[in-house]
Image 1 (spheres, rainbow, N blue to C red):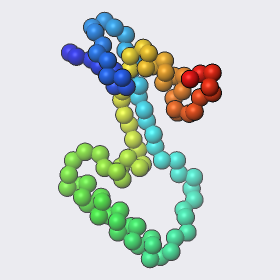
Image 2 (cartoon, helix red, strand yellow):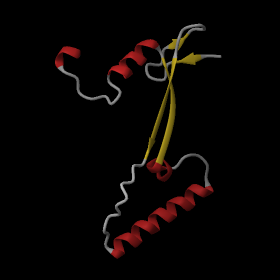
Image 3 (cartoon, rainbow, N blue to C red):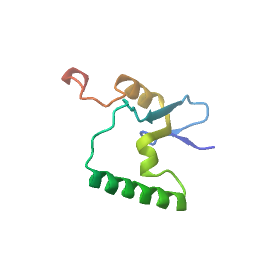
Image 4 (tube, rainbow, N blue to C red):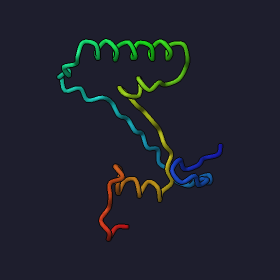
Length: 98
């Protein structure tokens, strides 16, 4: 079975340690609904219904589904794991870290 780092693409030989990163993101509903113009609301709902119908006809994850819940699995080599752990949100780093 061939293993490869999903971040850098490096082959991972048998017996070399690797880490599985599970990324899970879901919508955070604060209980408040926006006040929308009735026409705008109807147009947004119609667009959403059309997208859901298209998704039901096909297979796989749709944009609408990923707006609510997203789950990804990544395999990382040691170096990529260390980079991710040091800065998981990919924020700008101070000059001394670059």
